[in-house]
Amino acid sequence: MEYTYKVIPLQKSLPIRLVMHRKSSYSYHWHKELEIFLVLEGSIHIRTTKQHYHLEKQEMLIMNCNEIHASEYAGSNNLALIIQIDLSFCKQFGYDFTQLYFDPAHLHDKGGPNPILAELKQLTLQMILELYYQKAGYHNEVMAHIHRFISRLLRNLPYTHRHENSEALSESDFQRLNRVLKYMNDNYKHAISLKDFANEEFLNVYYLSHFFKRKVGITFSECLNQIRIQKALELLMSDKSASMMDIALSVGFPNVKSFNRTFKNKYHFTPYHYKKGQLAVENKMEPMDTEVFNPEIIRRLEEIISSHTRLINQID
Image 1 (cartoon, helix red, strand yellow):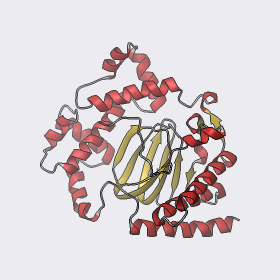
Image 2: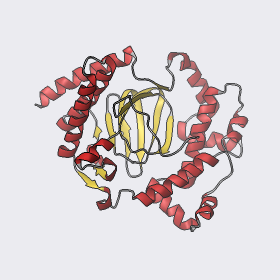
Image 3: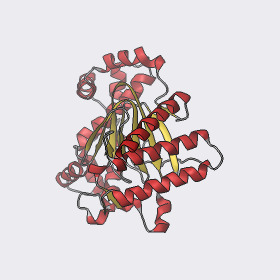
Image 4: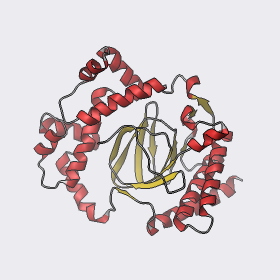
């Protein structure tokens, strides 16, 4: 069962998790960990409740803790490194990162001459290489890089406390949205509507509709269709014998026509033609979610570090 609030398993004895993503999309979710996206191949669209980012190769995005977001990988040859860091240990120093909201305008590194974002990317890559090589004292080095990363965030990027920011979601907003999104994930196979959920919550459907659109940025129906399309895509690529009718009905679409229309609006191909194109490159690709420590991936990361070292030296 897919929950909208993600619990992130971390590296043993360290507050960090690394994973490679090739998946076509991830529906709306959030988690308490700080998340960093680094694109190694292709491009990614990432949407939060207020922002829409497009990341190209070697670009980086820092995602606030507890930020609702969804991602879509454009095309078929995509590879992104996701780094998630649990910053709950910072509470002992007086900083609760789940209650801090960094200005989104300063979180997207496009590879330009921004010394702070360039240094944050450099620190991120150094954490990864320390975890890969695991030389003596690597735990200390990883934590040292994490501490430097945190201090650069706090000293150099503008932020507010969530209770001071009218754009940030409150705790009650999170709880209600989690119930709505969980309801969708639990019941997407059925013919459900916002009215059904509003009745369960004893809320006016008109109020709930405006609340959801204002907080998430899309309508209930649009979000539900995103979940259905994501589930359909997983079936499309995993069950090669399933017909389009079987897939459409199993994820909650009333018929193939509705499934084809919604799928094509998102991917610009019918499900059949999308599957045909994906199968052509299937044998060349790694699994959708894989562990990071692959020699070819490490080689790419070392190249990025080398280029960023030159960039930082030029800025200095």
